[in-house]
Picture 1 (cartoon, helix red, strand yellow):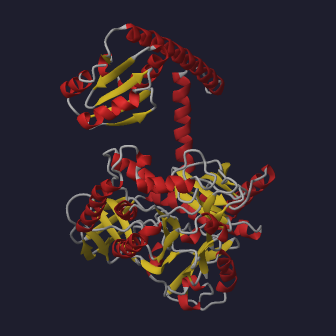
Picture 2 (tube, rainbow, N blue to C red):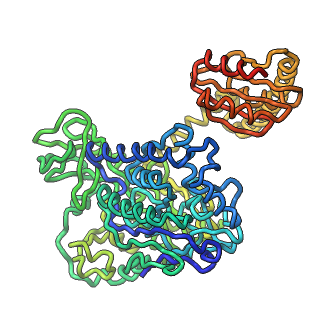
Picture 3 (cartoon, one colour):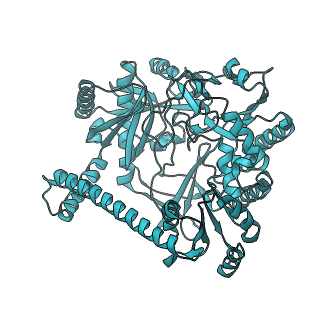
Length: 637
């Protein structure tokens, strides 16, 4: 059983808050929707952007009530500087006339509901949770690696955040998600949270929850496991009854060899990874996607990227799974029987090598009490994440020696099948048959992807480097098989080109690059000093001019901000600088502290946005130049 629990420490700070929760299974993040369905989602998002305008009647984002309540909430606990509620970022775009655009269907749907009802919404990969999920107060020692970052950023002591047994899931309540639990294309079980801190909006929260529970299943094929609104009197909810356990896989392997064999299912067609051509016929067509009576193509699943190739000479530009059926999409004219398929063998081989190599490493690490938690097998980014704090030079060399020996052994790879109902791990019992990949003497585990026939076919497996992903996780980068050759050729050519560009030899390239970098830093400093001096000179010139409204030559709006700041230091009265392009950008500089007052006068005339301090404000308007000039002239500065 896995729960979502709001801790007592949270309720002491926010006794009237409510958290709307959904737990979903069988989510299809890569669902290929029909054109009509995509139009429906686009219409929902467009309508939500328009409806959200009512939440931001005031030009300053923090002056709007739905933003104010969250700004006030964030003042009740320690936050990282600049941290804001997730809702504020969406509404800021609406305020500035830059509607929230389409990303992917799942994100579009949650953004549409968030905008329509003005509640922040977060979505997490529930299978990545370690134990129960909590919303509470942190002690500052928890692990956290933000999305898109390589350096851990632990929470502050006293910070409100979502966390599980492995660390923080989302910092500053609903500000920033972590890499460990982020949703990706392979995510099938998801946790959705929507927060409310306004006592009088329970009815809106319920409506928003109901709408999410309708939209996500409708378009993503999801099934709702739990739906609830958590409050102080009901502080927890069961997300799901059964939780996948990583250690079940190890127990299962020890029992697999004793199970009775079963007949292969359709995955048997991938037992020979070198089978890359076939002739077949069309079985079904749906929205220009084709299913065939046979296929040699493999679609992205189980950590292995999709194949590339042609069908009847036309490039395959899409592969997707629906259950056990692989659907194909091609560029160009509709397909007709007979169907001739050809898979790019070099790319298939590049994707297959790490599959087999990582099975070998998986067993190696499990025997040492370690676990590979995620992998990347694309030819331009091969890696795996390991649940250890660091790797010593001795362990690094031992691992390289082990995989080298496995390649030299040229151990055969066998495939056999067992009934899913007989399999020890309950997670596999939903399948009619389970395909077992046995690398003789090295590893045995369930897997549906293509694999090599012998470990010698790995050819090369080179450990490149490793880096910290969190306090307890490292990422190991490697290159294997024909990708090693591709990379070697690529890097050799790059080194030669760089050496030629820098007029040096490959041996002296690093020293030369360091010298160029140092020189560039010095040049940048000189340029910045000269630019600052030029701005000061230009500002002094503008300050001495009798004109109160001054147009920047060349319409260079990038100079507007530094120039207005320089002018503030030498100006004795009030002046307006502007740069006219498609839009008119302007700055009001007032030594007397009237800049905001003047901006408020201009807003209804210019229909402009902007803000700043009493002495300097900046703004932007879309009116024509004549209207702008007339408006500022009538100020009689």
